[in-house]
Length: 248
Image (cartoon, rainbow, N blue to C red; front, top):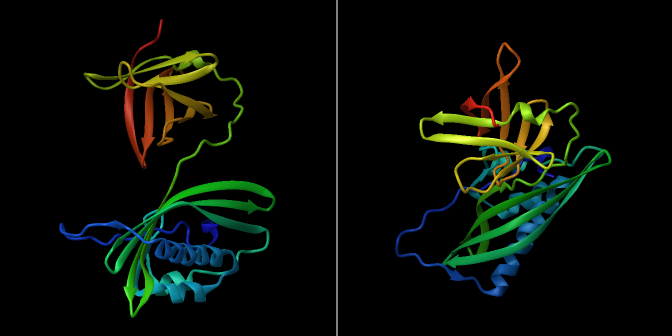
């Protein structure tokens, strides 16, 4: 349950020269790296700093999903037992290991279950771990992961008038998105023939996309109270589209 310890862990990758070629790692190595990784994630709720101290190289780099960079000393010091009322566990899924001589790369999904004072959460991470062999032992040199966007719980938002949002929205002369309603839901198509992005309401004039990125869609209103623009908030940046016409 990273939000109480390291946030999410992430790795700094090691660059390989053009002659390096990855081969599928032997089963024994794969199992060893998975055991090490499982021990590390199991150590988070209990605050077992020693597991991390033993596993990391002295120059290890850990980057969480928010881009925060930590090294061995910072990482070990950040690990403490979860406070009362918080608990969690991480299951490793779909692991793949490639070996480059004395370097091995583990790609694995970390499936995390969290309990926050009785409320249940599931968070999925795609993780990449870089191990190097030092003095005959495999040590963790880099740890990187990203949060996988998943469908959030649906919210009931009262007094939504979907017709308020229908129309064309443009951010360049040849770039227009069409917003329409169908079967009680709102959808946006970014180009002719594209798969519609279904918009899930979060609040009045605020929706979340159903695609892989799960961006926010914010409709803006003018002084007359009518929708005149659409904002797509993507990766902490806003793309503004001005309303060109009303459907129908």
